[in-house]
Length: 113
Length: 116
Image (cartoon, rainbow over all chains, first blue to last red):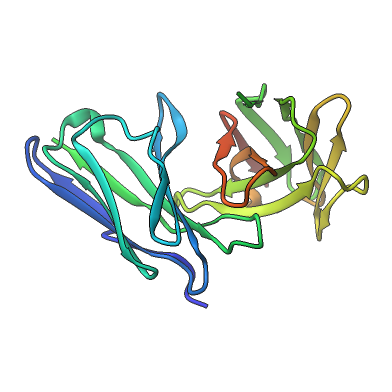
């Protein structure tokens, strides 16, 4: 099993630009989570999906952030426009419905200049 | 709301020795799960061990074991025969058992250094 796949692994962009982060969950996992990790706030959940439907997006910081899951094997997290305070490591994780362990991807390190 | 606290920002251990990382949590639920994740410099989050609250027996995975004290809401991680590759940030995490797929709540993390 390839595990959770995220792309890109690193992203450097300028303030105001649109950023799209991508995630492919483990096949058969019907839950997908987006987390953000910063020094100031630690690890925090942004949003999660069940069967491609957003269940809890209360962690999404503001309207500049949006997430989609068009099918069971793909999700995106978009930031538009990006700001320097969005600089963080963004993790995607997935879990099968009957199992309660979340498996994390390698993360995307985002730097907004 | 559930909270997870790791009171040790940094710990160090000599190679081949044993170290224990502390974690406490606060919850009013009776059904939940606890996890230890390891984050090496590569920043990937790697599951180390998990514990179901309904199980009295402490979980063990090779050199890693936990001391789960439900009444005290304590969940410490013991690493035996420490190896250089164990050096990482360790996060304790809580997950409600109410619905599958609910969010993980993480502690602040403990940075473990292994000295040769």
